[in-house]
Image (cartoon, rainbow over all chains, first blue to last red; front, top):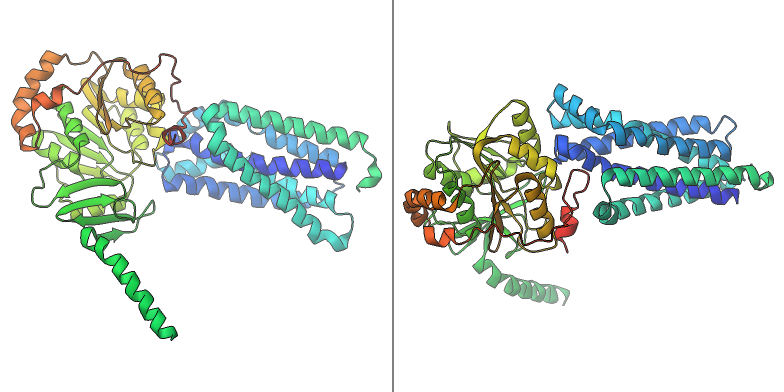
Length: 202
Length: 295
């Protein structure tokens, strides 16, 4: 049950980060266009944020990690999408006031709007792997399992967002949907952490 | 044995390739950060295309024996927007292609200062080398995203008498150039009697969405539906038909030089609302233009 919860959080965290990355291009385009620079800036910021997230998540995995804490991390990554809904336009407008260059502008805007949620998504993985591993000799196996689920759902997040969500929903409605599901997944994992027998996972 | 069969294969391939090479030759291919650009020659018709295969969608074509000829009817309708405002002083064109529109406008409106915004530097290079596109003091090119350029122009209080949007391809639409917010920015840099001429789509599910979005920003507009669909819109009241005809008569020699007549042109514009009243408007929040166009 606990393993299921950890994997479910991994799945949705993977979904969330790529759905957000796809939306960020759409959020920046009205201000900085959709040139290759803008996509380059978005992808760069997401990669840097994830890499730092992995580093921090690895550190966190040393400090008595638990399913409850994993749920909390996941919830935080979702809640960090809220400021994007509220502040994207004022932030973009003021950055455009400072620099009209799509390269600098898109980098700066991506840092401010998307760095934190992407970074916290990155924190989830190492903590999840730590919770999955029950036998050090099988560490690689569990890491592979976690990579599979989170990356497979990243693919799903990319596809569903770009092919379907944008056709039915506004950008902010999609963000709200992502926040809602993230909160629900975090609540589910938290409930499992309090009710499922602790012996199953360490 | 192996050598023989290899030779046989080469011969077959050569035979298969020969006829199509005789029809359409690729004169040049230009690498670009966005997509490769090809210049083809089909019996004196030189075309710019973004696809490698002959018969792919052609962006611009020029008849080498008569560079003035407008090979695609859409260009005739785009240039026809001069009938709404025959003496523009400042013109902005978004999307260069082979430069058909700016090159023709520089002779049809010789007093105008023309600015072109083109995202892809490789397109500018190819237009200059293969399509006689010449820049000068009255015709300049900015290599950047159209939306960013227009946002800056709005901020700096610039105004244009004629704006042409020609940035859409057959299979890819820059979605941020087809939203209510974008069109509002375009409206903001038009002079009160300025004109927007947009080259858009006539078929596909996108048609009603596009119409509703233009109507939300400009109110009534002239709709010119041939193979492509052209929209003529103005920030204030539309120029009436009598004035259009009067303006068109003075432009008649220019149209005739390019293979069309005032009478042919003036029957095309329509103000009929041929889309459902409850059609959803495209916005920066909701802009699935490519998905709609694919349907």
